[in-house]
Amino acid sequence: MTQMTESTLPVRNDLRTPPATIAAIIAVSVLTSAFICWLVYFHTPTDVAGTQLRSLPLVNAVLNGLSTIALLFGYRFIRTRRIPLHRAAMFTAFFFSTIFLGSYLVNFALHGETHFNRLSPWWPFYWKLLASHIILSVFALPMILITFFLSLSGRFPAHKRLARYTFPIWLYVSVTGVIVYAMQSLIH
Picture 1 (tube, rainbow, N blue to C red):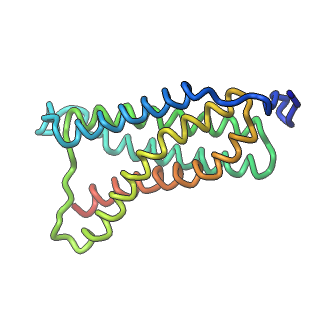
Picture 2 (picture 1 turned 180 degrees about the vertical axis):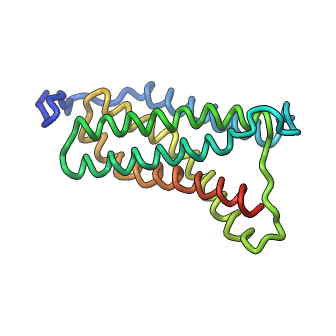
């Protein structure tokens, strides 16, 4: 049964999400996480001296910050039932997060892992924040992709149910990405 929402998009309540689609999204997410793990722990950086694209960490923090802003606008728009603006904000957040992921991968390929001074009094807070950021980012990727798939395929009730979990995780990962960058660049 198809019905129209405030944004004139058809709502599909009669469709089930194909398991192959979910499996493909999860497979892409797992491969992406495995690739990042390989880059961080096994790949030898190509520019250890940091002479090329040295501003990538700052670019990554800005992209995370822009994603955070778009997420907050998207939340506000959906709470006030401004569906087209919500959709635009969420596509903007997705765009910034996608560009961030590409830039993040390039930064790790070139420069490798950024080390934080373990003798710093901030170390206990830093590693807990970083660990939660990393763990939740692994879960955020498939959740974001599935939430977008549900929206784009008109499965708004399922989209809404999953978005209740996706939004706070995505927001946390975006915000903590900026905090981790600030700590690495200001405190190290």
